[in-house]
Length: 608
Image 1 (cartoon, rainbow, N blue to C red):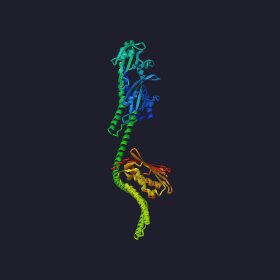
Image 2: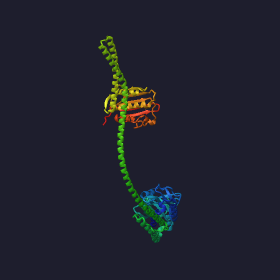
Image 3: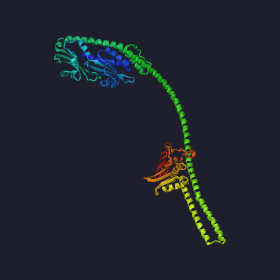
Image 4: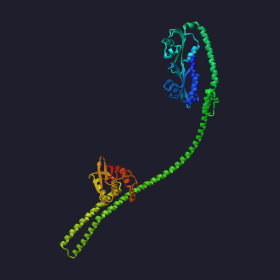
């Protein structure tokens, strides 16, 4: 039993050593399918105790395996995931493989990458059938049996009659005998075949295994065990001692000469590389087997690292030079940008002053046009009044001369009085007309140039604006319709309302109709909650979409050659949104006329 237990423990140690050595091979670390496949096939051929060898990536996808017909995915097994997660050698559970009907134990070893994280996992499957060769080599008495049982009471294998008693439940009485406090011992018991035997057992524990322990049991028929117990014991002890001595000597010689010395060289080179000596090399002949190839891969890696470090240093120097140049460029560009910002600020101030002057010029131009129109309109009643006054003066002089001569009659006085009454009536009517024009002009003109907020009647103010625009409107055949409640009073800036309607009407007269067309203009005003909604519409030719979209932009005009500045509607937009605190929108389609909707508070905000 001790020999069998020692053999099983050596199986684990040998598997660990094999997989750790194999994990350092360049073919394995690169996960190259072809090279890895050839290496695994060669190793499996040399180690017949293994049922299979495989290399998989961290997800469990098999990259190479021997034999090639192995499983395609190992990621479903807990021992595989444990090897990846814990990054250490792992012993899996015992599994039954069909159709061969043999039990194997799995070993997994992570393949470390450049940063220490696993880039793959090596898996070796050890066939428990190899214990049969040891059992038969011991030449035990007939009807002797060797059994492996796991901690769950499942008989993993049995020699002889392996096929009959593999992967079946062990006898409960056997489990009870081996489950006490002692890790090993002996007992008499009747086997499953009815033969009474002397059994020796031992419980084996493996660090990192998926199972808590394994039970090994060797049974020899009682008669034969007692008859030759001493001779068998002596012989077995001698054989065991010789075998152990031979195994130790062989392992030391092979390990020292073939593996340990080269591993020491390789480990020393790794230490020097970790210390920063990138020029270090192993000095191992690359033809010296697997370790030779591993050493060659290490030397190649060290050479690559040395070359990469040299390139990195050169790149760092170049980067430092570029950084210095960049700092100079940034400083130069910052100075240029500061100068440009100062120039831009000065230009913006000039533009603001120029815009203010243009807006003032636009207001003065509109006021000048209003003055010219009103002056022309006043000229007619003033001329009639002057003519009537001259006629009255002539009649007064003639009557005075007639009275002085003493020839004035009653009929002459009556005629004079009739003519005087008619002249005075004509004089008063025309003077009142001129007075109304002057009053309207004064109100509109003063409001246009004033920024004072006051209470005013919207209906009356619209009439005053239209009266001031009468000189322009009377030259056309257009009809103006006004719909506004007579009692609609707001607190706002009349000087802001006037340019809104004035620009609307002026644009209609300029752009909406042809020279001989008679159009219709509609002005509507009404209270909507706490706002005033002012709607203006004409039935003229309308605007194209690209014109309508830009109508409120400063300096945009379609009649620049006709003296337009393009500031009128821009002023309207600013007056509505900034001064009056409202909104304005325009709707127009070619041939469908143009309409504006202005919404402002009944009480305008005060200017700060």
